[in-house]
Length: 197
Figure (cartoon, rainbow, N blue to C red):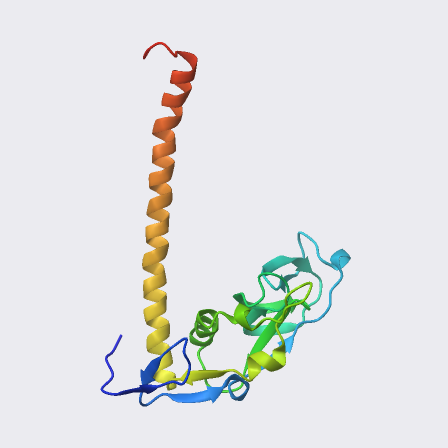
């Protein structure tokens, strides 16, 4: 990532200082936030033409769709409200998700990951089942770099998450190797408790 010559206060505690050239804008000027459509449990199947996304990702499949394109989806209800997911192509966004329709030239990954970093769950309203208000989300302020910088940030995030994915894959391989080695030893110990074979 590049260094910037001057920084300024963002006025937002969660992010601190931002580059001088960045703007501070309300989310509603960058995107439209719309709650998904109600779908019955009977309409959701294990297979179907179009995926159904709820507040925490894929719920199943159905024969109709509500959205077509690339979208950020935000979980709207429940303990995991504020979760950020992505959907592409034709899909159904359920009533438990908020679909984000970009209004300006904004990169979807940059905005999605910014929303994730904002920990939107903190803005949920306490009730029997926590929930996010679309009006509250769209009136939050965010820092806005120009489009070129958004692409740079997106590429940087993609690179870093790729490294993390490799690290996780290596750890899983190590864990499997450890299991492959220790499992026979534990088995042998249990069946021959008075010494090695």
